[in-house]
Image (cartoon, rainbow, N blue to C red; front, top):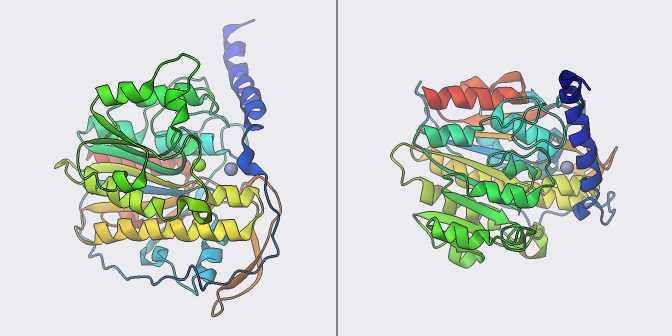
Length: 387
Ligand code: MG
Ligand code: ZN
């Protein structure tokens, strides 16, 4: 076969492999309670207002926060249940991104994560590689090159598609062990999430936890210890695979991990880049489970509040909050803001192709408005970091 033709076929081969392996993702099935009405009494929280005086300058620190599967309906479901307010309302620069991947109107989290991390459109299933399977530099790596400290925080396994896109370069998102090994190839300062077993229980029998410790990482599995770390290198691997959902023992791990990561990264005079993912908003969408979506949405918003508190205090930090795609085709067919109740209905158990929101706060925020491509986020962050 002609070489060009083989190269053109490669992405479809990867895609087929990705689709086969994705069948093993068990978070995509669960209770169907889409007609449930929520009450806010146990989740309601107050939202602080943070002031930012726009000084035209480039940010020293950049925090990119991704709500996986977080469309406008997911945001507003959370806002409704929190009786009409979210930390997100502190953001005055707002836009939308188109989420289509190189080979599909409806993206998966790998292609979308790669678009947000590397600024390229690629095929569904790709982690940090282009349509030919070649590695492309992500913005965390750019930050590293610019002398900044870097970190990644997620409520999924740290090897899962979204966080992986900011660290690894693999042709298929299901290559968790190869993705875990890629962490050793970086200078990342902090990562907190699940996925311990991909570092220890491996086909190649390597023990990556030992290797991380040799590289100077504090490898910890308990949030009580993780939150005590204030400097140095930290690998927080809090569960064998995915951490549980918010209401099932995970609790406020995400806001806490966000605060810990900022505390550590803030030591660097050259600034830092941090990616924070609310991974499970997507899983609530896959399960057509409004309660799950709202819990995860509000947990993610509280992590946004932690980042805002830091950014408002120094006026040299840019926060960008966005999503990789929408999940579930969620519609809000009824609700009551004063009661904090909402009635969600779904059009699919998968992702949808709609635009998703972008919220920016801090120096450079004005560059993240209007209707953009998902690839523009990485491109504009890259430009700001190279200034
Ligand atoms: Mg994700
Ligand atoms: Zn998904």
